[in-house]
Structure formats: structure tokens, C-alpha cells
Image (cartoon, rainbow, N blue to C red; front, top):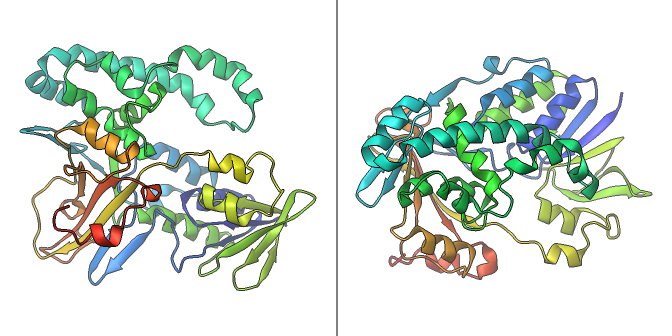
Length: 393
């Protein structure tokens, strides 16, 4: 039986572990934290439960495919509920509540942005064609320049909006500034500015409008917990409190891992699902890879970060499941986050109020609320201990 060690119990590592275990391999997932899930994990404070990171699921059919390929039915593990409207987008004096129901969204656009109804119809039609062209590319590896010379990539090239930013591409569809932002804010999922993000990523907002936004009862953390359960059902192991110090290699082939506690685990294959920057700098032995030398890593850019608050509140708040409050000058706010790396006096804020949908996350009559403000990453040298207690911010 082939032995596989998976480093990291985030959704990527657990998906790999689940698929490999279902194929008869001896899988061991090692996780440095005392809990599984990585950024897709849960945190409990008293009677309140919070997702630490992602707060919704898009394109659930892809998750269903992973479970089906593992010989399991997703619905046996997770209860998904679609959120409709998907979210409330608040601009100064205006609220837009887009729905996966295209007719409902068109009615709202007709009322709020009457000149852009046809643009929305074109967006849904043209972006569907783009996604269908891109799917064969997205589902394949891209670890050499040769991959970009294959026919599947060349055929999709006209759909990639090469030379245009996400914002410029959305300007081809919409004239109202607020509606452009309603379809470009998803670039924050990548930690990027819509004025710098490649135009190909219009598919992010399209996927939300085409496939909807879904909430697993109990939180998004239920996905990784379900994956871990499948691994264990196939006889695999998911071990927490087991940080990896080094990936062991022989003749440039991974052969196992050295744990921080001094224990050594050997395997036929090693799957690395740790944070990329950290893993390249700390887990690989020097000289293992020529592709990511320390000099090359130094030139890489990191995405923005987020300042987050998890609030257990003593009443049930009548807010939508998802709300985004946009800064009055969104472009300035984004430039402060990704460009000058300075704190904004008027940040955009995301409010996650899942208790209106899911009663399992807080006691009756109370709310588990998650607030997030995108902020500069730690290359900014911002003193967060000072900032978080400064009443002026």
C-alpha cells in the first residue's frame, strides 16, 4: 500500500488526502495547529461558533465532484443552504441586493441603474462563454511555459481579456461606477486591486451570479471536517499538533517529513499544502528547487491582509447574511491597502451575520457576527497592537 504524507489540513490538503485514501493509499495528514481546516477552520468562544476565514461556498458542484470521486455523497455530510439575495452591497445612500435569479437582479438594476440592464445581460452571456473556455485550463497544471503553448490555452486566449484590468473589462459592460464595483469587489478574494487584477478574473463575479452563494449549516468549517471524516473512514489519519520542520528529500525526491517534535515520518509521496511562501522558505531543504530560490521568492508580491473581529452579541440582528459596506472613495481605499500600504480613514467593511440563516452558531436570540476590513499586509510595518486600540481608527 502506497504511503502518502500530506502537510497541512486545509481544504486543498484534505481534498488530496480524501481522493488518495479512497484509491487505497495509506494517507497521513499532519497539521501543526490543534485543530483542522487551516484558514477554513472554526473557532468557538463560549456558546458562539465562528468561521475563521471563508464564509461562503460557491460552485458546490465542484465539491460534490470531489466527494463523488472519493466514493462518498456530499449531502451525507453537509447541509447546504443557498443565500438569496446573495449579499447586500451598500454604497453611500444606496443598497443593491443581487440574486442568482437573473430576472430579479435585472429588476433591481432597472430600478437603480437603468442604463445598465443590457450590460448585465451581456455580462451573463459573454462571461458564461469565457468560463466554459477557461475551465479546461483551470483544471490542468501550469508548472512550465510549455503548458501555455497547448491548444486548450491558445483556443481560450481570445476570451482572456489580455491587456485589460478587471475594472476596465467591467467598464465594457457597465457605466455606473457603483455597479462596476458590485462586479469587481471579488478581486479582494485574491487580495488584489480591481485596477490591477487581470481582466480574465471577471469570472469570479460571474460564478457568484451563475451558481449562487451557499452556506453549510454549522459554517464553512464543516467542509474540512467532512473531508477529514472521509479520510478516517478509509483508514487514513489526520494528526494535529504536529508541525513539520522539514520535508526530507533524497536525490531531489520527497521521502518524508521531520516533525517539530523530532519525530520522522517516511512515505512514498509527500503532498505539500502549507502556505506557499512559508513552505518555500522554511520547509524545503536548501537547493531542493531551482525554481523558487530565496532571490526569486524575494521578488514575489504578497496579497493584502484583513483586520477581523469575531463578535458574540446578545441579540439577534436583522441584517442580511452577507453585507459589504463600500468606502465612499473605494479606489483610494484600495490604493491605501495595496499601494501605499497605509491605514484608511474610511475602510470598506464586510459584515457576516450567519445567525439569520443558521441557528447552530449562537444561543437562541443571539448572534455570532464576523467583521472584516481589508488592510495592508505586514510589509507595511503597521503596529497592529496600537492600531486596534486606537479609537480614531
